[in-house]
Amino acid sequence: MSENENLRRVAVDPVTRVEGHGKITLLLDDANHVREARFHIVEFRGFEKFIQGRPYWEVPYFVQRLCGICPVSHHLAAAKAVDQLVGVDELTPTATKLRKLLHFGQTLQSHALHFFHLSSPDLLFGFGSNLEHRNIVGVIEDFPDLALKGVRLRKYGQQVIEVISGKRVHGAATVPGGVNKGLTIDERDRLLADINDVLIWAQDAVALNEKIHTEHPENHAFGRLNSNYLSMVGGKGELELYHGGLRASRPDGSPIFDQFDYRGYYNIIREEVRSWSYMKFPYLTELGRDDGWYRVGPLARVNNCDFISTPLAEAARKSFVAFGGGGYVHDTLAYHWARMIEVLHSAESIHELLLDPEILGSDLVVKGEKREEGIGVIEAPRGTLFHHYKVNEDGTIKKANLIVSTTSNNQAMNESVRSVANEYLDGNEITEGLLNHLEVAIRAYDPCLSCATHALGKMPLEIELQDSDGKAVDRIEKGSNGSITRTL
Image (cartoon, rainbow, N blue to C red):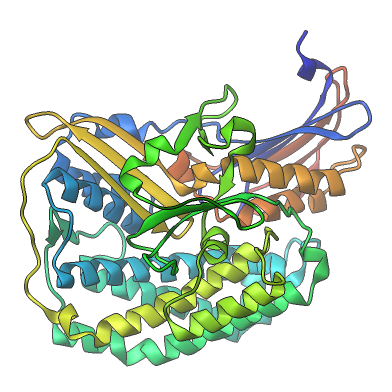
């Protein structure tokens, strides 16, 4: 008999207001303590297998179909890997800046979508507020100016993407060794026309999130974890979203490694497979399976960097660091605050790039000698994203490995769920409040389950509480319209 056979089981299925569908299972002991938390994805995607056998030049466009929210991130990570396959280690200055402009547009629109549309209802109304009002419609009704800023921020990011890639979703921007079109003066001027408003909206979003977090002490311990962190940093230790070296730190900020060449990522990261989830569990090789799990994304990046190169975001980072007493901020809900700091950095970076004369250049492609292996890494909105390809002599992909951001945060999300459940689950009754508290902890990571595995269709949300004999003692269901029904 396995140890888990005498544990009671609580399942949340699916987790809502995230990208894709997930499920939570809590295994309880006889004393109603959470013995184990499992955040699992029940569908399989297998995208790495789909890529095999395809020509390498197709891959940057093919992998965009992994996700409708951050296709640009997959496009650029794949493009960086393909650059290496064609023997190019450095693009022209114009091509590099156009790719960065595209990437900042992607980060801006994705972060705005997550905060304003998915997470702001919890943070503005409270986790236990009226369910019928705790959604984006409620935000529009009670905070119309804020909701409009969120819509406009996301719209601007999408406009940047459209100018560079031709479409707001699943566009075409890169070719091996560069980009496929330049930026015209008219396109630059159209983007510059709104940038000052975007900067103001981004500053307002940072101020709002700083206020929400600092003025609500009850949020500080919510799902809090003293974790390791992994992110990319620039050569001087600055926040870097497009290209740099890898830095990993322990919870006290001490380095595990720094400026590591990402093309050797497989020497520092291992991926563990567990029987109950299609999502892998990466860990830092040096620290081992039990201690090597880490967090990625905005919280990791803002903690890990020494400074931010743009002035407004750097001032916001200093306030963030001051809140942590000069050390790392481990509050899981501080992900939202760090995320808005990156929105501000993205807006400032877009402004700088649009004013740079080299962005209008016409030297767009570099050529080199073909190689058999290419590795591309980028800081996607949700965290560090790895694309690794090996090709045959005819240029078709023979092996592909992807470590997406949500996968890297997998163990951390499980740990946060366990922390929250231990505080809010009494083991006697399942409530909508408990359900939402568990979801709030997961939403902070902005997981993209579509990227990490796969999901199809809509499922009702269901939580069931079973006693140690496996008998159901309580069950509630959450409909697609948000209604809650107790069915037992």
